[in-house]
Length: 190
Image (cartoon, rainbow, N blue to C red; front, side, top):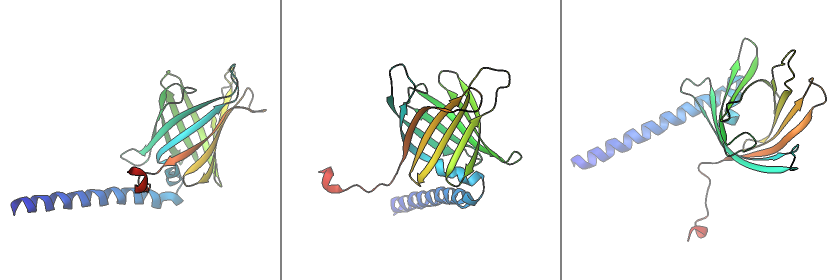
C-alpha cells in the first residue's frame, strides 16, 4: 500500500511537472503575436545543410545541428551550434528583441573566438540580419537571410559586401526541425 502511494505520488509529480513545462511552452507560443514571441519559430533542434559558394575548393557542403532553447527568464533564445566547419566546429548564439530600437539582435560567438553582432527585422516570413556598419574599417558587412518555408523548415543565405551594396553569396542552405515525437512505423523496428 505504501509503495503504491509512493508510485502514485511520483506519477502525480511527473504529470504536474510535464504540465508546467507544456504551460511554459504554451505561454511562449501565445506570445507569438509579440515581437519577442516571433523568435519562438527558432526554438527546438534544427538540422542544417549549408553549401559554401566562395571557396578555393569550390562549393562544399557542411552539415550541423542547432539546439535552440529559451533561457529561464524567457527573453533570450540561446542557440548551441555544432558540426558546421564553415563556422568552426561549434558556437553559441543569443537572439533577443530590443523594444527601444524595435529590432531583433543576434549575438554570435564561434569556438574560434570570433564574435559578431547582427541586427534583424522580420517582414512577412523573411528574417534579415545585418552586421553593424564598421565605419572607416575594411571589415565587410554581412547579411544573413532566413526564409520561413513552413513551421519545420527554412532556407538560409549568408552574404557579404564591402560597402553595403553588391552583395555576394558566401553560403546557402536549408534547415529542418527535428520533431521530438515523430511517429515511427513499428514494422521497421523489427
